[in-house]
Length: 256
Image (tube, rainbow, N blue to C red):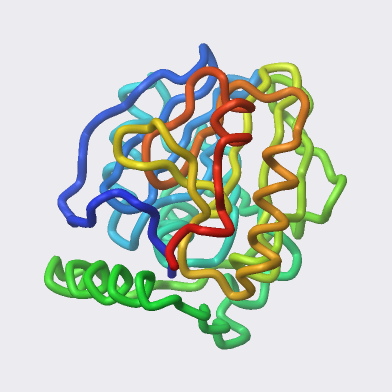
């Protein structure tokens, strides 16, 4: 598991924020969830929060006017606890299909042990504090979940309101993915990119399996041409001028 630069505390926020007319953020202290309205009157979510988050996710879906059976897709950017945590419960409640990067599928299914991140000293202290908070909150254990669609570099997602490019962005995990929506100039980067609590600076997500590979993935995403909005899972979304914010970032220096 890796967490972003936001201060860690476990109580659930209830903030549902419109990012675009078809994308909303459900903010959690650890691991935001994003909703996407689909043209068939359904919804997709990008990531699912910690275990135990399903009631909050379903409550947000209800506030958007959706029923549980209208949650069609769960896209997991990677296998960490704060991203796939509620996926199994949501599948049980909705019948949604799960999509994830091919190289992370064994860890999401629970058929292989998760590889451990290589923490810097700063990351280690952050991780220990976050895990202590999660344990103190009585967070349920993580349940594995079946993956219906294994995603690869260059794939596109069916049923979304516009073309979606799947980008393989390894380093944080072996099979991490980002989703790029060029027409909306919007990016779901997974944990490759986070922001500071005030949203003014982009940073490398901490807790990477392969730091140099994660930095290369960060730089790849920062170089995308069609990009104004970055829906980070940790921190504050970058709502305008994302290319300038990412160009000013110094991921090589983060978390050292």
